Image 1: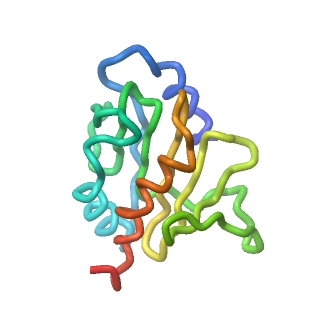
Image 2: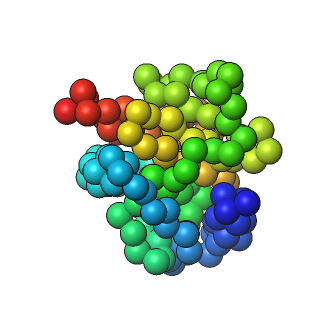
Image 3: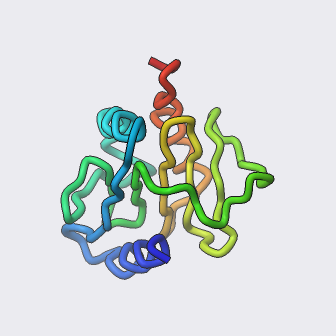
Length: 143
């Protein structure tokens, strides 16, 4: 339900400019260090949109453009994701596509779940491919 509220806020604010309201997650355990690392690896431009600002400010949230692309690191495991679900692999990262929310994708890593909302004119596969590089570096073995 929380993800649906975030998506609704993002889509409502898309095109309004300014700061985008996004509820920051509260990562725990090894996800904290992974998300701190990811914050330093994210691109300033994604699919043609410049990095924007979110409120409240959080190192675990990133938005591009007017919020049509938003990332939240350290979210809980998706409730709809079953142990038998097949993840879509893009750039070496497994992505769960929520069947009830077509704009919501979750990267599954061994240290953190990273939720990405892709809206507007953006092509999800391209955005996820661009984010798979930095997200793929979250593994302790990745350095």
